[in-house]
Length: 120
Image (tube, rainbow, N blue to C red; front, side, top):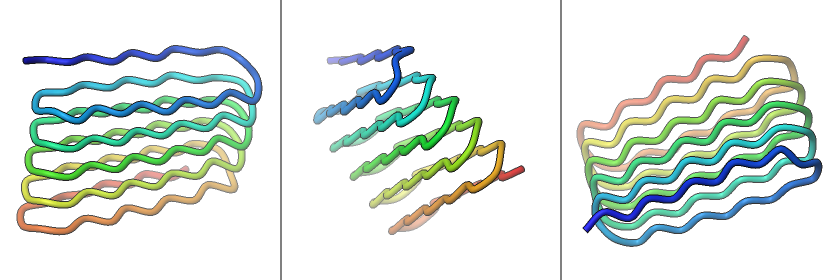
């Protein structure tokens, strides 16, 4: 079974929370403006999550449990905050932030995890 979620928003002071709880899930969130908040929670394995935000004071949180999860966050603008938490093995996380006042936190537990963070 494959469950897919897609959220695209271009609104000010926007919040988005996605939750996917079975195998082979996908979640994509795109936001622009300011005061954006995005949260994604996934349980299981082979999950995929991507969050894209542009503007000012963006906040993104991704939580994944299981194996073979992939998480990507791209933020462009000012005062961006990104948090990614992954537990299990074989997880991959990538965070790209462009602008200034950026903060990024990635927590991984298990074997075979990798993480890349680019800030400029």
